[in-house]
Image (cartoon, rainbow, N blue to C red; front, top):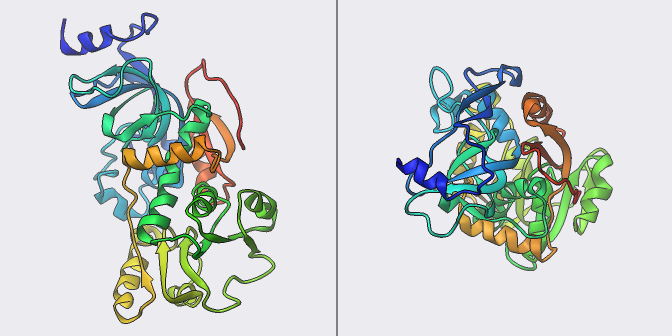
Length: 353
């Protein structure tokens, strides 16, 4: 019996004997219709990895960038590849049950319910992910809901780590109704911030229900009105100039960009670089960051969710075979929460949105 067979022997008796799985395959860059549902070989966990039976995954704008290969600069990153995608199966955030564990993994065992964010591979029935990128699934969430939680780490790291948000400070969230924005409103409140959220008319009531202290309907008013007043601005849209964004900050305020503009070649990276240079000459700083998945943040989010201080907002659900359609929708930039991919047939559906 080889090492993989020994690991699998510890799994639940009802496990499927097949060494293959259904997965969304990404062989070339392009619009999401380049994706295909195929039967491929099931991945094998290494010593520090966990093999997860994926019950649900979450489709994000980041996944859309990876599939399209735009901005082109992403093709030079670990998520891309030249001349074609390096990773066969896209997808990052997910939730499921542990199927098998590597020889050095002690914190999980087969049957455990987990959630987390891998570098790639979540749009499939099985996923190998380092144990350090997993945490126990929140007990009050379904697998679908839990799959949407890892994207809260983007908001958490942007507000807490890059922005340095402290209790009592005023924070502006531009793009408060999207997949990350709905998390940002709730997390900013949990961190003690006074939240002003910018969104469209149709989302005002939803964003206010998430806990925003003030809501700016951009169709009716401009968030620039009122002058400097925010200690942190988390920008999830990137539709205003750097000088405009700095104009609403206090003298030592922080502007935290998380998206926006730049075209097909470099995306927001040139904007961020310019902001970092200009920050050398002003007390109002641009605080760039790259979201880094880690267990500590997953546990922080788990605690918030189980305490009822934050919940995922799920707008749409798709089958695994419809990942292309899901990413096409997410790529349009008008999402009102998270977009979830249902994968396991035994998944029990319960909405918290």
